[in-house]
Image 1 (spheres, chains in turn red, brown):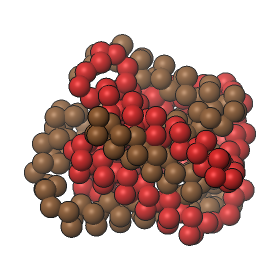
Image 2 (cartoon, rainbow over the protein chains, first blue to last red; image 1 turned 180 degrees about the horizontal axis):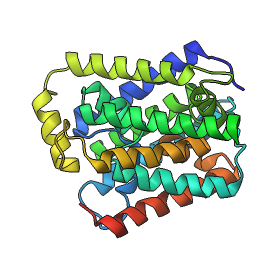
Image 3 (tube, rainbow over the protein chains, first blue to last red; image 1 turned 45 degrees about the horizontal axis):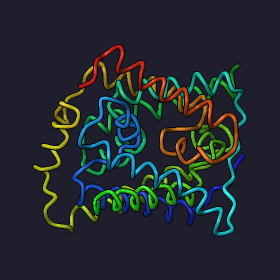
Image 4 (spheres, chains in turn purple, orange; image 1 turned 90 degrees about the horizontal axis):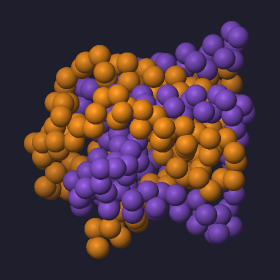
Length: 138
Length: 141
């Protein structure tokens, strides 16, 4: 159980939107994390470089935040078998559907892409259904 | 090089956004998805704030026309942004099932690389296996 955190949600969301806008303006690329991450796999091309740098910044944000003296709460309750299955589904599904929470859910919807709006509704519904079944039925 | 450093800084800002919004905590994401339980609506506000920020910046900074965004969309995924097909629906549903099982999507997964938790490492490894599986089955575009 977690508390509704209004200010941190608004501030964090604004930073996500700002980073996505900056990447769009300077690189003309969508800040879809699944696409950027999958894009570092071979074959390598002209886009591999900036993707690696973006991911490096994304990964280093956590130790930097901790270095500033703040804690990052991470609570994982699912067993590792569930985590393995979940990772596989997230990886495969995000590529088949052409995006994830950032690419469809933020960048796509901001451009009023019908594809992204539909994809976001579908993955929200599917995820909500899984949580409902695992917490309240099974 | 300048573009690479810029990309690094944007990744950093994106990661800090996820951390500050606490979207890096799977328990918080799952609490959002658990509408009929002790619901935590934070994720909806994170999305709304990100959308508002990006939407406003898109509107007021010239050079980013709808046309260029559409061209890029077609160049990057080969599909016009209004086309709904089976791949989109099935892919989003598969993604959603994995997200609901774990409370983790790709951004928070990568930020979790330094969490020190075995669950984070298992997820990241499996996620890249999922990418490889997709490219193996469907060919790289």
